[in-house]
Image (tube, rainbow, N blue to C red; front, side):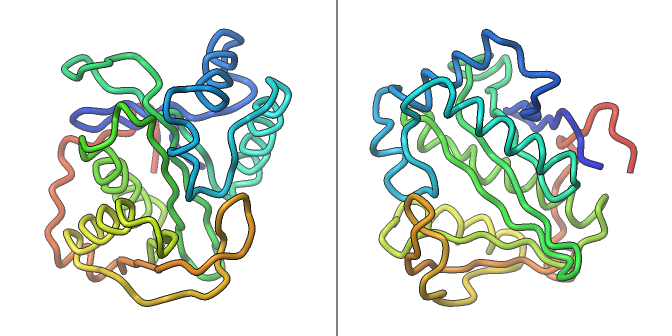
Length: 211
């Protein structure tokens, strides 16, 4: 249902799944999610907290694998491509959930602190929008950010407006830190807005994926 690999101009996204994640990658992922420099700042506004044990990382892999198997969404590891500083290293994670009845894809993303400020979040979002609207026949792409998370709100507003959408408004008691309720801003892009924005997606590829 979803591509295992996504390529953009500067990034390669590889699906996280129990059947394909190598042991070495699993432990590298655990080390990043537990003790990477700046991990407390990275996780300040996301829905998960730094991992305490490799078992916690394994449980995360199992959860996203099940979600993918059930066609409810998927998660990816983000790797900078050859032209980028840090090429081949895990730069962060990204994923989406799908509400098929509402025909909506909801995005999520986090990046290690050393990769902040490069525009990777927007590049990954453009790839997910192409997948949603051009290959999965969805009607809406959405993203949220904690009202206190200024950096993410700026980034999300920028890439949604670039594709014809923008901020819808405030959602009280949305999904917040550690899964606890928190006020968030919601941003959306509709299929019509996306198509009218004349998206430039020639550099986005889904190797081996059939629509």
